[in-house]
Length: 414
Image: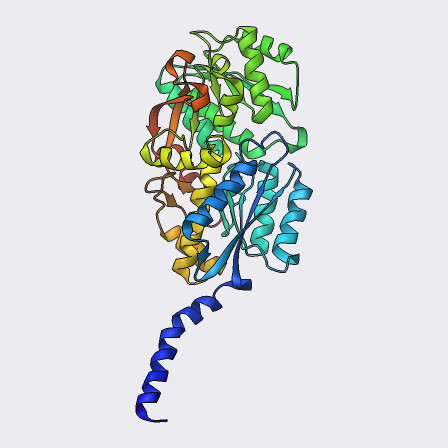
């Protein structure tokens, strides 16, 4: 072999090396994303098939491949049951021929907490977009868990602080009683918010009015709320329980100029289910609204064209989280979870969902949130167009999520 042939061979090997290195960095020759969500229960409209579509859209917009390897999306229904969710995760992480590298959505706080813990044991990345619990970036944080859209600290403490500034001083709380399945982190965050209200000269009536899950008759609980006569009624409920409670409260005549409805765990799909007649005037805090600006509208209309519904904040968050994950895999040169997580935390989130978002060391993606109010029927272009909300104000991420100084996450150096 002459010198020219040797040089040519060396050049060809050098040119091939980057792709060889990249290929070696992708386990199972595929980057596999699992969407674990509620597809048949009370949260199916919040996450469900819409969350799966959002993940698929993210992969397609990314080109269907990363590092020249196929990206695959699979999905399953945890049925709001911890054992079912864990069984699916175990199959995905251990038994399937090609293993899931990242699990996303995780609607339902109990399922999210259990699966995130198991994912960390298996060194797999878990990203929550749907559940309310704040424990995943607090006492139950792991180096492999991220929280993307909202949490119970933000929607309780942040919302009440904004409403206090607007002169609403007294609050009644109606909360769904899940018995031993009640999210303790959510309950703790409500107590923290109540303490903040008290220090600012307001009052939250305690104990909260507890309503059994899946109740059909709210009359005795609404009578208690009426007797307390607070300036606002906080509905600390979700899904069908929230819709039914608000509908019966409106019919009961509870809402007036001196007694406002306030939601905590509220999504666009809930307002659409209620209708503007029932939900008008309700205030709540959300991490995303489809009609916020030109960029959010453009993506949401693409989603609507396929799903025939506008996206919830959880569904939009799935797209954002999956895209950020794939960019991190690209930057890391493979799907090694430690290296990918380091890239995700080192890179700001800038897309239609969040501007200049920051993934903190505790796994919290800090981004702006929005205090919104449900439009009156006369203010809307039409419910068929999903013209449901008006943004009252932007709440900066640093002012609404739990400060790191208050976190119990063991990953934080103090």
